[in-house]
Length: 87
Image (cartoon, rainbow, N blue to C red; front, side, top):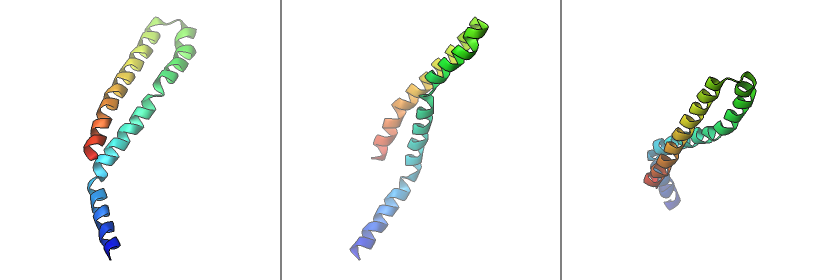
């Protein structure tokens, strides 16, 4: 009987935390995809910018990479706060 009551309490608590946990999971997915951006950037540089000798393409790719890394850094600083608040 006591096991069922504790199970109900646990399910109730987990249901109340579902939103914040999913929010942190989405952050993690975006951060992990962003970690691929330097590799993707290097592939694009070698495939497009160096072959075409286009400085504007190289500049744009570098700008996109820096923007992606900045977003990743901001998300990395917010995610621990969200997880800390959940706990």
